[in-house]
Length: 265
Image (cartoon, rainbow, N blue to C red; front, side, top):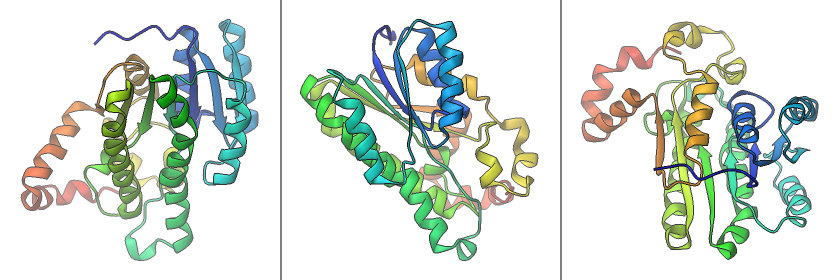
């Protein structure tokens, strides 16, 4: 399906200070979109704004936001939205993971991951939904993970958050189907970003799967190319998604055969 022009569109991106969030912002600016960028690091956002502003004649606003703080989400989004007539695209990109076996994950770590990956994502979405429903157009893009389809050892909590994101995304898609509001889940495998600085403190996982890691520029382009189209899912790499299909059909066999590969963390 052909991507509609992004020129003049208002695009919100959380977790925009680095990784695929920053790359998505870069591509959207190149296509003429107005950007509203959110992240915890205001310094990094300001640097990105300066860089993009020097290259592209588009409007760029940056706002410090910790998406684990739902009060802050309400305050910041309310401030931004009061001056806008339309919200065209929301990219829920903010998220993180910590790889630990279930008995080693502290309650605070569990709450932290759910507050950012799930509750924060839902809170950001709830702020733009009234606009999109009223204007009968828009696109919500949720960055999930292949971990939301196939759980592996040491990622029980992270996988649980991404399972929740996929469940929410699929329900939301059906709710908005008759309103011309599109909903897409993005399910990448491991990406070469700072995500693993927290998730994989020992560097073991990155070392074991480095040859399979996706580049953020590649993922970002797939996301931006799908904007304002009826794309249900983006699965990267495509061969990895075949594993999730096989897993759904033959879970016991898949777990037995894949046991060694799953224990790479």
